Length: 288
Image (cartoon, rainbow, N blue to C red):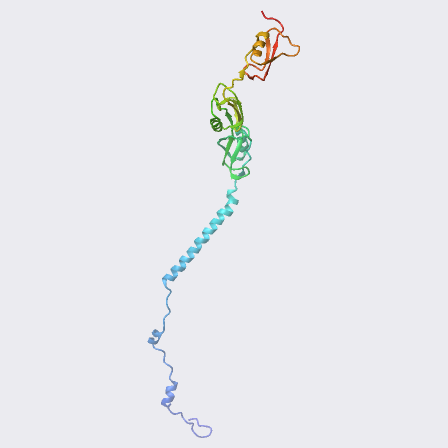
């Protein structure tokens, strides 16, 4: 038995869909594969770009390593390693070589003799200079070079007899000496203007730079005489000879006026002029 509508009439059956309705209800077709291919594909990374990034990273790493190594070696290493066993150089001034060696021995430093030099302020055989300087921090087993003083430098007076003044100046300068005072006197030993003698005499040893006095000749002088050696001669006869040459002869007060001469003034070899007096002292007894 078929069901009937409550109203007693059969319901209306839907009719077949129209073409327009079929078109509207059709599902949207998927895009074809060719459309996907038309879309722009993603570009892959280029190999050169990756190489540049790798080189840049490597360069930064190398630079950082170099900076770290420099800081470590110049800042940290001196404090950690370089100062291990470090000592300060003692002051060796005015010490002998033996004393300097004893002073360096506890520090582990070694002594090296560099040479010698003249220095008037430091006694001979004492250390006048050192390298490195006193107080310098160094590591053990370092060598300390020292210079030893030769003391004050001395020079020998050259033989200047018969030299001109200019020649004497050059010879003295070459010897490390210099010309001091200049005196002129008559002399029959050398010509006028030439050196008769020096003070100190030739071969005398003097500190370097010491002045040397020169005696220059003014030539011959007829009124200049050389005092003879009259000791032992009879005073009366010697008096007559000297007075005959124009000299004034004297005797000590209350001195004897006879006998052999026991003393005279000026001394033998002295130069005399006629205005000079000569003093003779007799023994007061006759010598047979």
